[in-house]
Amino acid sequence: MNIQSVLTATELEQVTGKSNFNAMWIIFVDYAIIAIAFAVMAVWPNPLTLVVGIFVLGGRQLALAVVVHECGHRTLFNSPKLNEICGQWLGGYLVFSHMGDYMKGHWQHHSRAGTADDPDLTNYQTYPVKRSSLRRKIWRDLSGQTGWRRIRSIGRALTHYRTLDAEQQQFLRRSVLCNIALLLVVSSLGAPWLYLTWAIAFITSHMFVVRVRQVAEHAAMPNLYNKDPRQHTRTVYANGLERLLFAPHHLNYHLEHHLLATIPIYHLRQTHELLKARGMYNDTRFPTGYLNVLREVTVPG
Image 1: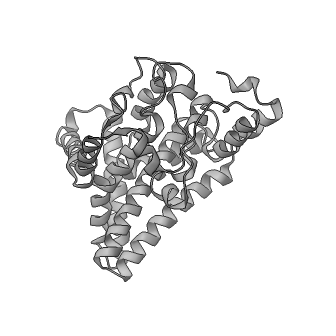
Image 2: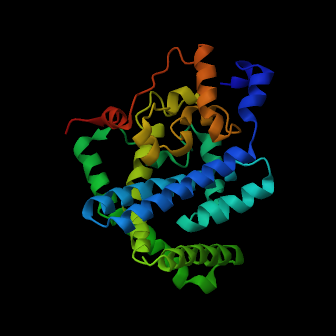
């Protein structure tokens, strides 16, 4: 399916246009929300603010991964250099996401989506699953079991640092440096314990929101083995709270991203409305809310 035959040349130019201002605004919003979450937990430290704060931080860690994704596609900034620098220093390093390695697999996901060769297929091909199975997966995420595997992976890389190639060593050094910098910042404000909430979020709420995102994007679609993205990729209508936690920066418009990966994330909603108005989605369903999506991808049991 080629949306270039649906949109006019002017519209296509509009939706694929890149804006350094929009890009910097996205990153500013992410760090502002992180700062606010830290401030609320520091000023009012109690079980409620800590739990809410950890969930908000997990959502922002996903948002930083979105920055990695967009910069990897070279669609966030107009400048290739800014995409390279910001995608790593302001996105990936803080959440131990290697932009180069990530994009190697991600490009294959785009080129092979709708086929049995999609490298991401294992994340969603078994859906729909029993609700009890999804509950167990969510418990493993929120209890830190899933995240602990990620921590062990990072630990093994650090342990075998000398055996890694120069690029991997650089990535680890910079990731550790950025996390030390975050620790120093919160320590300078008199609350070093706030870094612990960042680490806890990374292995709990972050893993949960990543799973929900993965499921929402592709699980239990009409046909995972059809090259038409409308058959294997989902866009979700999300409310404000869901955008905060599960779909930062219009991440919920995932179908549009698969229709044309050169569209910056800040133009995906506009693209959705244009394509909808042209009748391209007449036979396409868009669930409202992530809870409804989770109902769609599960069966009783």
